[in-house]
Amino acid sequence: MVNSKRRDLRTIQADPTQGVQPPERGTDKGKCYPYPSELLAVVSCEDIPRDWREVHAVSAYTYARPGELMVLEWSDVDLDDQRIRITKAWDYENERVKSTQDARESRHPDRTCVAAFAPRHEGARRR
Image (cartoon, rainbow, N blue to C red; front, side, top):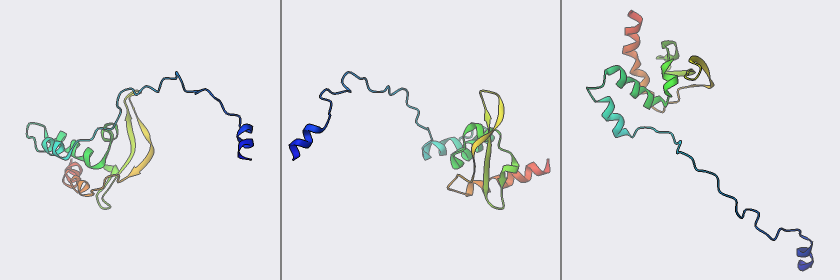
């Protein structure tokens, strides 16, 4: 019985993948996030202007992309609820602001970075 079933199967004897090249690996497009020691070196370096150090810290804690940070406004920062809404980003190719595909809130695991906005937010209100 087993032998008769084997005879009924239509299988290819040759290997259909023989001679086919594997896909190209291309360049590594892995995301690059700083190690904690690298972030600490940047945010504590007095040679880097304070505004840039703050941008690096916010970027590291929120995982926001550069284009998202570029168009971040005070209305996107909710100090009371300790959330940052990321709903838009800068489109470098078309040089305009675009909506993000997935509007998201508070992607950061550590809400203490939002508290760092408080002194800046008060300063911005006074201007």
